[in-house]
Length: 368
Image (cartoon, rainbow, N blue to C red; front, top):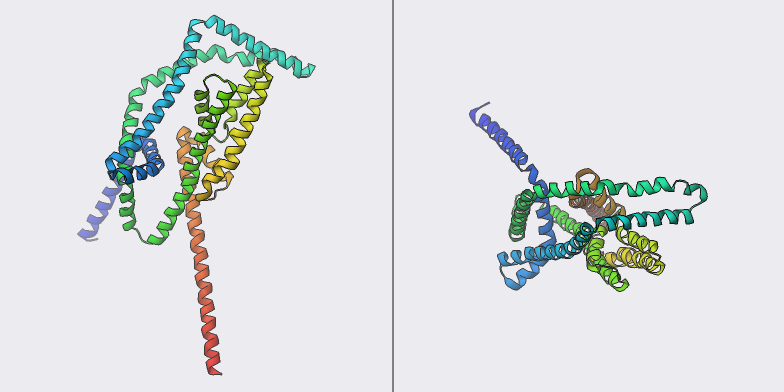
């Protein structure tokens, strides 16, 4: 092997080593990078709209990110205010709260005695102990979670700062970066088709899904306010969050709420909550709002949507709600691109056969 060949091998090994080292030292920021890409994609429509108005990339990116912080600030204020109010009530009258919890659990046991067969009612004491047992360890557990969260606040702040800066630069330079990368790749038409298909799929998986969840939360606010439910805005936001989780859904909010009113003997409100939640928070968003919003996007089977949002949560945690749809969408776009290429190739071959057949027919006619 000559000198140039040895140098090339050493250079390749060095580059591979540096790539591995870079991946290793940034592995803790992988989730932050993914979040930044996700937020940049979600904010791109708002950024493009603001860019047409302001004609300034920096200002448009700043305003787009500012909207997110304003929305998060409103969310925290709306949620924290009733939470602090209720916690202060609990701390001021812990004995009364314990008495109310005891009465609540006793009412559940009474309902079991009334509605279940006599044989099953023998297990009410065990059921009551199972229901009330979490109260003994709930407060220490909550205190431990709060303490751990408080100790990690500096890390969270650094992560938020890095994610914000990455999102800012991705909004401004992401498009030009993609164009530059595509200029170095072969088969540009196929790649552009793949990226267009990927954008349609991500639009259906992310934009349509999140917009539907936000609209579900708005509908929940209106319904809870009409029914006189305390803190309707806070409960509406909680409903929107649970609507993001396919297995849980809005029913995680309105069913326990209906059960609460049922145990208070307010059967009318409980029944209205169940009907309202089933029709306006489950059926209409899933069967009317989401399909209409997805008309401009790619058609995706509900099973793929369910798996993409649900399965990764059990493997990699909360970040899976972003990683899962990204990976499933990528594979689906690659599959559809390959199918399209195969179909077009078959059509081209069929046209060639038709042309060849016509040429042969012309030649035979000329010979005759």
